[in-house]
Length: 207
Image (cartoon, rainbow, N blue to C red; front, side):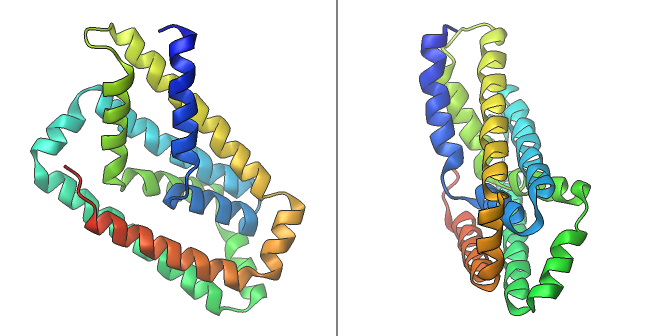
């Protein structure tokens, strides 16, 4: 695919993945509250989850999932449940004293932070549908498999750059200090937003 055709796709991709959602909430919240390393771990976990769905969509399994409504429904409830769990954790953090909450945030391992990011994406049924739509729009009918790989890897590389930049920006000292000063308000906002995301997944039409 010529670069002139790929660039508009990547610009639209950046706009889509940068919009407020469970993944961006997790990355920014972790970066502000738990530091740069854990923010980057969540970001890379999100990308890993996205890569899994890209493979599923690229192999045509997304269409197979859509033909089996129970699979999407199971994924929908799993995703909503996980987001509700994150909302509960944020709400609990908002009610705790600053020192105790800071200790909890700093105690999370990088592996656990990565897994949290991956789970946010893997339990989102709209992710595989989004990848399927990207491939359907960006890859011309009858194009060789190399074009599919080019689009998929380019989008994933763009995700790495976007999400790591987000983690680095929100872990900067001035931002982190502002977060610590108003931590309970931030955590309360995250609780509401994660809860709203869970509600949106439960009520969204997936087909």
